[in-house]
Image (tube, rainbow, N blue to C red):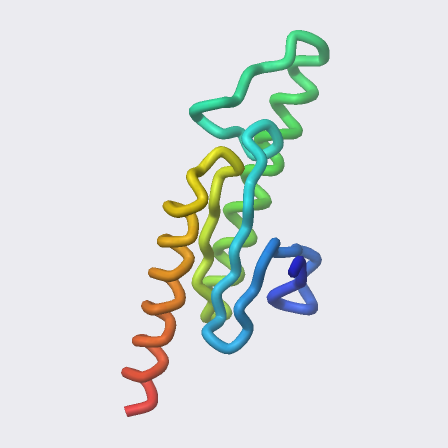
Length: 105
């Protein structure tokens, strides 16, 4: 479910796990500048380059703000194999759970 991990932050994750504090973002290859699949537009090239660079800067800021608030962030490319993406999400959930148990002891 798309939701804001931090209500005061106008950024929406595609999936959040509130208790373990894991936010998952599925990034589109075009909009987020995938190094494998990004193809520069021939029309308005400078506009699109600037737009995508802005998206990447916002993504980095979002990751930083969430991490500072104790969240683990998983970014998945839209072209990524579902099994591989799921494995990375599960790994983050396990790491978050282990971190919580360590802290509680």
